[in-house]
Image (tube, rainbow, N blue to C red; front, side):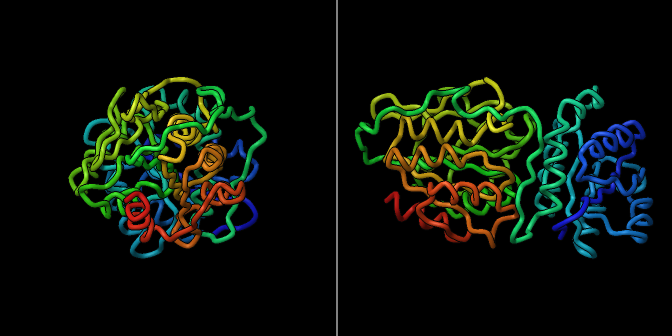
Length: 357
């Protein structure tokens, strides 16, 4: 896929106002060119015949042909990176999850009201998502960093751990971070877990309306229990807790009991929830009782926190480049020296279980 020059984007949305605003937002980034807009998939097909885009932003609810059907046809006939830009409420979340399962790279949650304000406030994330999608599955991809306001670190939510003097227990906890491509990576990882798997806490970058349905779908296909985390939930064997969208997830400990805490707080590494926040809390309260896993995703969220985990005695695994959709987050963690083992996605679950047992 794209490795140099401007990223060419085709916007497919039945709303003229959304097409206009999204075009302005994307073209505010000097590395993005909107090559065209289309009001429905039929118009998009004619535009693609003239020129192949690097990325398609795609609405789901459209006249004549819905976005999900169009996505299936794209992936079966001429795969192009697709970013779903849709309202996510109620059943819409299931549709968006189905889109990810069918090959969409990422989801941008478009509100039913106030779309213009949302797009303007989310400019940096939207542009980064589109550029990340254009680079998906390119072995030497590197995340482009924009000259914007400084990213906050986990210091904004939780102080650094100051001591390694944590009592080791027989109970192990696994903390996992993922972003672009992570929904399918997490599905494969969690479906491979046995009933007595260690307790798992997960941060996956995704919209606020999305995480509960994502957890419910995984709960139906996995042997372990999977749920959206609630404040004070215990981290127990045979269960995975997924951070709610727009809330930071922290691992805490009281005696021998591990539990999670939800916090609002600022964006960290431009994300809420942030992997760095989860990993720092794991270093602070778990130390060598914790194992870290970092999976496919754009950017560097999780790299600093994973290094703090390693310094506190944790064992860390990174997904390898060949099995990542985007090798940004694992690559950054590896660069810091935080990773003990680099493995293909298909092997991570069994290695986690082996080491924890």
